[in-house]
Image 1 (cartoon, rainbow, N blue to C red):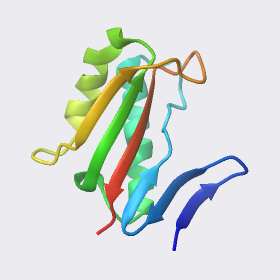
Image 2 (cartoon, helix red, strand yellow):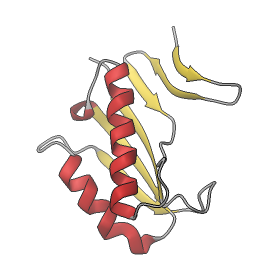
Image 3 (cartoon, rainbow, N blue to C red):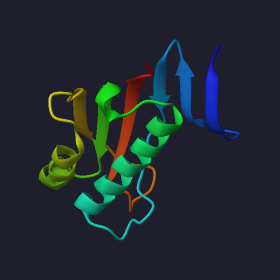
Image 4 (cartoon, rainbow, N blue to C red):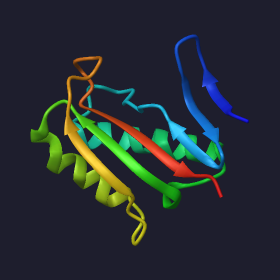
Length: 115
């Protein structure tokens, strides 16, 4: 069985299958923020979706991070390092990508275990 959350005509914000949660790419709401602020917003959105799935960031298997500009890598890592659980860092990839909206600096995709 597949569970779908916040489903619209094009996509779901999250799906769960076989005790694995797959989050859609999460983006910031307040695009006036710098990369640290945008990253913090995205991480808060991830936390909220993981709570909905009855799991948390210590169960993240993989994070895919898309940055509009690799010059923001250090600022993104500043927010990430403050958020990621000690001794529970997931596998992670970070790439530069042209994002769907020019004012988005970051988008993060998460896969996590639902215990």
